[in-house]
Length: 314
Ligand SMILES: Nc1ncnc2c1ncn2[C@@H]1O[C@H](COP(=O)(O)OP(=O)(O)OP(=O)(O)O)[C@@H](O)[C@H]1O
Image 1: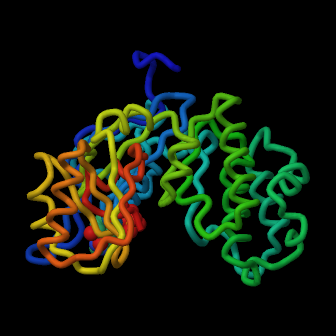
Image 2: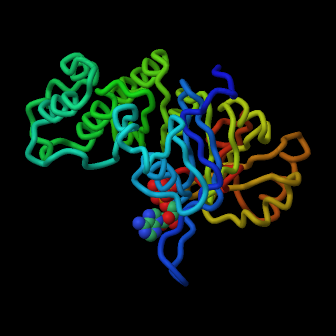
């Protein structure tokens, strides 16, 4: 694990970003600080609207910090954009290519902008792009655009790469190929900053995770550290939809969280002992609630996320 005294690949200090003014003002980022250590895969997770994209776009140099400071590879991403461009790869969620250009041509063009690009044909093979290399950008499916966009981000052999939801909408095989690629980048010392809505992806790939909510970092650590810091257990309860979760949570130990993740499915983050289970079933009986199933499990990163934010990632 790299030493924390090294210059971090990304350092964000007390960043604040707003959109609009007056009554319409939105504080998208509100005093956010985080570090991404060199050579790590670091995930930024948060519910919709938490401020992830705004933070990442500021790191990429697309937005100027309104207050606070951002350093990328020790440089200012706006003032020193020209110096950073050959060293940083950016995977955009959409766009970045001309509509009429063929996927393979676009990648060759991108490669030609760098001094020492990866061999394009090998990358095309690697990401399973051969079948659509001669297809024009406008005819690519969403998943094919994702793969092209990933290839464009890494073809120049960047030291640091920002991947915004790299596997959204991909089939399991392409998803696995992307994971393998991120792993290989790490083995070559490349730093990856990832946003994802898939918790299994964050858990599998990340050395470090920052959880963002309402424009701030609310928890950071390795996936294991984050889980270890939470309630040890999760109770999954299946019954009818629309239970009064505020009333149910009063039966649980202090600090417990109850979230209805889908109609009729509840996740209870709480310490568990036989008395707690007894109180839950007692509450159900008192409220005429027939329980279909109760499962007690160890907490996962996804459960920890629910416990911290009270919301699902999607
Ligand atoms: N161009 C904009 N104009 C006005 N408000 C915006 C703009 N872009 C984002 N916001 C608002 O800023 C807040 C943070 O948005 P941001 O896109 O950074 O969050 P996010 O964590 O990336 O969300 P998601 O997971 O939905 O992509 C949200 O409330 C969003 O509605």
